[in-house]
Length: 71
Image (cartoon, rainbow, N blue to C red; front, side, top):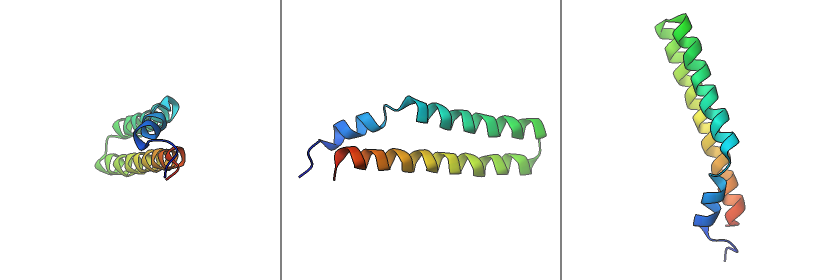
C-alpha cells in the first residue's frame, strides 16, 4: 500500500515550476531560432527538438510522481 495518495504526489510533482520554465524556454528558443532561419527544415528541426524537450519534461515529471507516490 502506498504511504502517500497518488493525487497528492502528482500535485507535488507538478509543482516544480523550474522544470516547466526550462522546458518552455527551450521550446521558445528553438522556435525563435527557426523563425530567424525561416526555412521549412528549420521549423521541422525545431518541432523535433520541441518534442524531445516535451518528452524529457514528461518522463522527469512521471518519474518524480512515481517516486513521491511510492507505488
